[in-house]
Length: 546
Image 1 (spheres, rainbow, N blue to C red):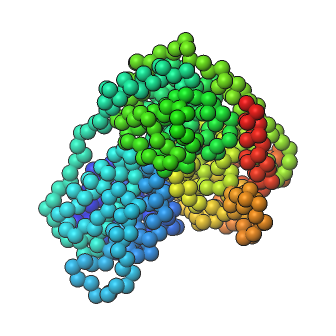
Image 2 (cartoon, rainbow, N blue to C red):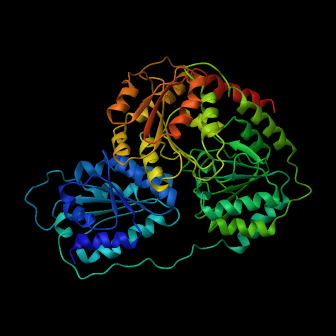
Image 3 (cartoon, one colour):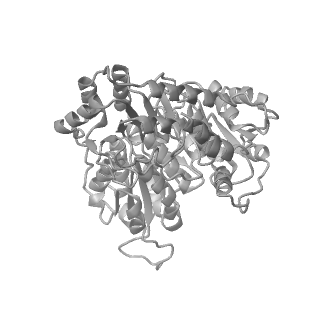
């Protein structure tokens, strides 16, 4: 069999449905093999966007998303999306081409050591130097990408190897089960929880697995222990639950941090230090129990005293069977915190100002989005407002990046989300800065005839850095920019452009766009003038009074 045919057969054996990317001349044998396969090529306008799509596919399915690029500049454009998947724990498999390795007449034209470049950004990277090695290399790439903790893998397929012949056959996936936690560790954790007076549950991104979500729901129902989430743990449990204490959108000083300070035992499920800290540990104040697939990566702000290492769902199941609500547990202070948090979250939800107030914007989005609707956030100031104010009711209904926190991923992620879930409503929430980094993918969405909404929040600036600049009492400098007419820009791609004229128009317009086929862009001016006052001062001052 031709090596490129074997490579595609190996992808089919792994259950691959889509390959996202941009082929080059070094990929043409592989492209021809792909043409006659069951796998669909999703041609994108930039390799970085293809990587974001593949990573999001992996995040939503648990199966490695696959992306393709040529050598040199095509491969280097994968760097950001590789880091996005690796830090965010999203299974992704990258394929890049290369000049012939046995004999080449082009010198070093476009040659970059891609394998070496990918080493710090992936779990596994190799150049294929023999067609006979393809089955093992592909199987190992998928195994590494998908095993806990998930991440990015990469193979380089030189064009002369791709056209070689081989008698090798694909290697099917083996049956495997994740290791389970040690009984003594589970017993120690259970004792700490039972002995505590004010235990508190924290849910991170690693808990965002179907079985873990169910077990955590059962655990909370049985024990009555209040919970909060990290940004990437949003939606693992329904945030309208009466025991929800908020999201750690800010690293310190929020209402939820008053609860954290009052807790004497924090059950930390699925979090690691790659995500921006949801709270800062301080020695001697409380017991922190680390429940995860892997051991804790100790940091100056995170050094748990008890570690329960193994399959998270199994660990929570075993703890649920051991722990019942205790009469000496006292959650009265947590109830107080919850009441004040709810009052603060409601403040501004009907603010009439225009450009629109962030709290009003988030509230209006929540009103019209169905429970299973998916928000795909780019990275910008609005991420904090959505993380804090938007109540997720189901897992993976808010895709935000709190690990690499890269700009430019919002629209590609929305495209992938709609491909994975064609019958669910999908909205890309982007700022004008991040949107323009991959705005060309509007054409991809239009070409694929997807029904998505792009909510573009326009402030004519790099708003998050401008907020930080103001908080540090520096004058405004280097953050403001100009923009195109986004309505006409969207329409030039064949999308539908909209610009509401008031806060009252926004909610009904978003609802109409969600119900109307096609790609819709809503150019919504936003008023960020309260960023510093609310997020840096008001919340801290109000919560301190508790």
